[in-house]
Image 1 (spheres, rainbow, N blue to C red):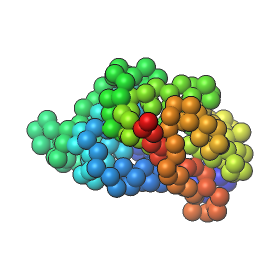
Image 2: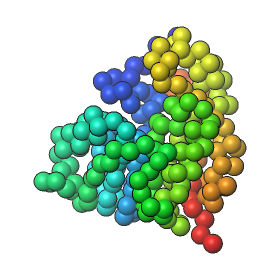
Image 3: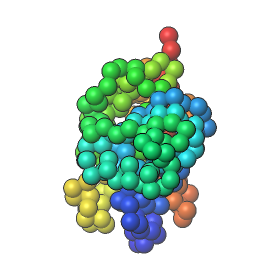
Length: 222
């Protein structure tokens, strides 16, 4: 029943009703501000990067992914969407780097903003999420921010669906799904000198309780 209600994922593996709503909220957060340099961790097929580029508020985007095929797909999607002029994106630039999110090949405090969407809930455990957040936050300049999402552990629909995820969706046997609480995330961010400034609830159309949150946290300047 849950699979029927939530709808299909479509042709892009990163798509889906909840994932798409999360992406839409994240795009709005980042395009509401002017950003010189943005790192996207887990660029995937380029769905988010393309939307951000079209928003026109970011001068340079660097997208990382561990799979070369995903990086190729991202550039193909963006060039196919008509946002490239030669090797550059209209109004800015788009570069791709093959790397893991928890071992970023960048110096500390390199980017104005970092965004990672529909990524944390697929990490195997909290330890991996905590490590990934730590690495992501380390490359943000003072006064800069991170935008990411979590699936809401306090949503009974999500908790139940994720508990039986391997039965509902066999693909989760190789790609786990996990939910977390805002309080746990806030504590980890505080350890790294970040504070949450925005928390956007994301819901399924048929369900009143937020199934996810898109979070914006800023690195506090001393």
